[in-house]
Length: 292
Image (cartoon, rainbow, N blue to C red; front, side, top):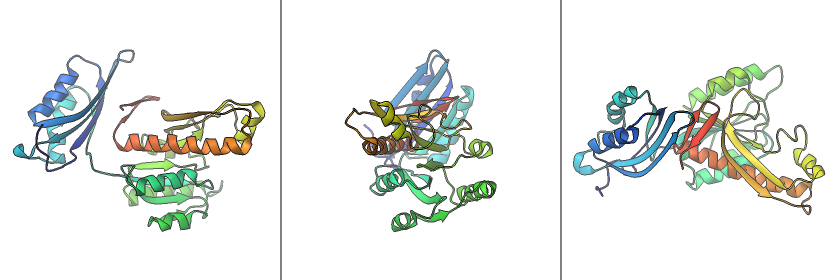
């Protein structure tokens, strides 16, 4: 084992490209050439789709010097170009800058605020946007700016323009819809492709509309669940990142199903946000590969 790098937690390289022989050798050879000590290596070779995915967490030994992030990116670029790779190379300790959007229900927001505060999630929540003023005190108690941006059919374009202004102002890397109960326009979803995550209960599309858990109770469901996915123009149909399911039975009333649903929503969303921020999720078409 090499000694600790000047960047003690090292770097994370995530990439995907068309499948070809020797890709693992090419990447690990590059890391060896640059005195990299690999701590974690995850690979998925999609034989059906002819596509390759890799995530590597590595450090560089002090005895050889650490050239820094920019120099490493420049050094890797020719290899990436040779194999038509999409790649991201980040410092492992770097926290993603996150903007959270929320409406009336606060459970997912509160969960993300707590997990971020205790360091469980590698992110910094730098702003919260809501179409209601209800959660201002909670957010500001955490020392985070809160922006009330009302949305009506007549003001929706202006509200989305305001959102994008905040995304630019705070240099946002990820937008999290933590039970934000407004439909985003196609233009906005395209602008946020691959950097916006939503959560919804997995009864959709079976139980649409008002009070889905009450509808589920009336049908005698035996499981409740939640799905966290990237946002796209298909309502609640984006590429899935994380899902949670919990078994229930006839003794669960509507309120019990709602409570169980809240728990699955919080867990599915926090997992999705964590994996995205750690560079474990690769978006490929309408699917994701999560390199755990």
